[in-house]
Image: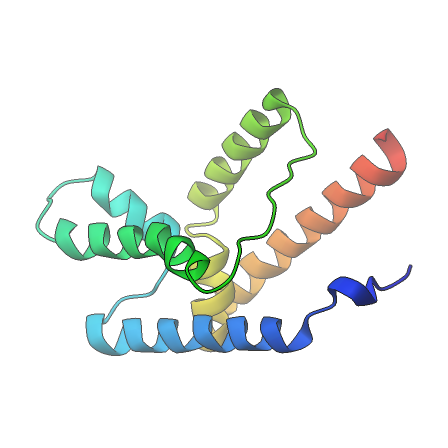
Amino acid sequence: MTIDWLHFTPWASLAGGLLIGLAAVLFVLFNGRIAGISGILGGLLSLPKSDSAWRLAFLAGLAAAPVAYSFFHPLPEVRVDAGTGTLIAAGLLVGVGTRYGAGCTSGHGVCGISRRSPRSLAATAVFMAAGFATVFLVRHVIG
């Protein structure tokens, strides 16, 4: 294994991680909720709709952030090395996984682990193990 030193960005990655952590802390302090994207989006699809405003604002911020970033720096090229069927299957598996795991990587991995939640630690370990296994199978066994 080699490191692509040309695209190695430890300081940008550290800054991104700090911003995600700060956002999660501020979200729980001011809103009293965990910043799990699947839960925020799922709350829009369920009744009652009394808290739709903050959910929509949160999701709009997620969509607007790359646009705001593009004013200061060019966005990286998006390249997807998968076919439509693979993307549909992956999306369905992620959706099913977030339902069975009672949350997604942002809720469990960022917010749950920082709260020392045993359930989130187990869920994140399973997410990571499944990702490692998938990459190994696709790159070394199937592909």
